Image 1 (tube, rainbow, N blue to C red):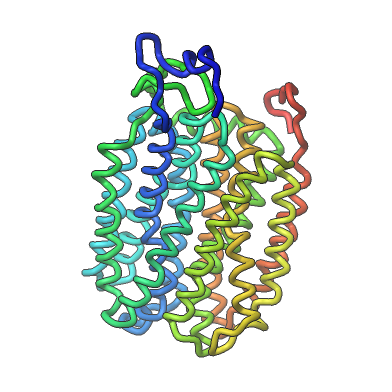
Image 2: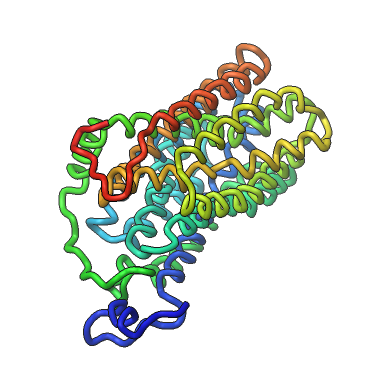
Length: 436
C-alpha cells in the first residue's frame, strides 16, 4: 500500500484529482462479478430440465441435449466477437444487450410447444447472450482495468459463474420440484434483467473515463473505438492459428469444456437420478461444486501469478481425469462420503484451468490476448456442446452414462500432455509471427 508521491501522480490524468482510496477498478470488477452471476443463472437450468421436458413433451434426451449444445457452441463462438464489439461499442452497451437476450430467451421458453422452439430460445437467444458475457468479457475487463493482480482478478471473476450456480441451482431445483420448470425459467429471466441497471450506472468502459490509470499501472488515454470488429476478430484468429500454442491451448480447453459444462453440468443430475437419487439432492451436489469452484479458481489465480501456468494446467487436467474414472462407481440413491469427496475435489478443479490458460494467452498474444482467449473459449464450448449432445445420445443408446465418464477421463489425460507441449517464453523473448 505504500506508494511514492511520484507514483501516485502517474496514476491520474493531468489536471485530475488523485485516485480514491479504493481504486475504481475494484468497483468495476465487483459489477462484472455480479453481472456474470446474473448471466450465469441460466446455466443452472439445463441439467434440471432434461427429465421434466422429456416427461412433458416426449422429446428424447438427444433432442434436448442438442438444444443445450447449440447454446454452448454459440456461447463459445460469440465470445471472441463480443470482445471485439466491446472495443468498438463499449462494455456497457454490449453487456446490457446480452442480458436482455438471456432474459428474452428464458422468458419465451415458457410458451414453447416444439423442440425447434427450445433450440431457438435456449440455443440461439440464450447462447448469444451468455456468450457475450463469457470469460472473454472477464478478460477484457481485467486487461483494461488491472496491471497488477491480473491472475487473482481473473480467478475471482471466473468464480462468478460458480457463484451463480451456487445461488441458482438449489433455488431452481426447489422451484422445479415444487412448481414445475416454467417458474424456474421465469426466475432466470428476472435475474438477468435485475442486473441491467447495475451495469448501466456503475460500469465504465476504460480507466480514462474516470481519469485513472489501471490498477497498478500508469495512466494512458482511452483509445479510439476500434472499427471493423468482426474483421479484426477473424484476422486475430488467422494470425493465432499460425502458431502451435494456439492449437494446443484450444484443444486442451475443448477437453476442459467437455469434462465440465458438457458433462457434469448437463448430465450429472439426470445420471444421478438414473441411480435413484432425488433431483434436489443431485442439484445440491452441483451447488457444492460451485462453493469449492470459487475457492479453487481464486487459489488458481493466486498460483498463476507465481508458478508456471503449463505445469498447473497439467496437474489440473491429470487429476480431473483420474476422478472421472471413479465416478461411475460412486453413483448411488443416497449421498455418501465418497461422492461428497468427489464433488469437493471436482469443484476445486472445475474452472481452475482458466487463470493459467488466460495467462498463457497473454504471454503469447499480448494486446490481442482477450480475442485469442475468446477463440480458445470457443473451442471450450464446442467441446462442451459435443459432449452435451453425445452424452444424451449415449444415454439413449446404452441406457447409462458410464461410457461417457470413462471417455472423458481419458481425454483429460490427453489434455495434460497437450499443455506440457506448449513452449515457455522467457522474459523479454519475442515470438516470431507464425512461430510455434
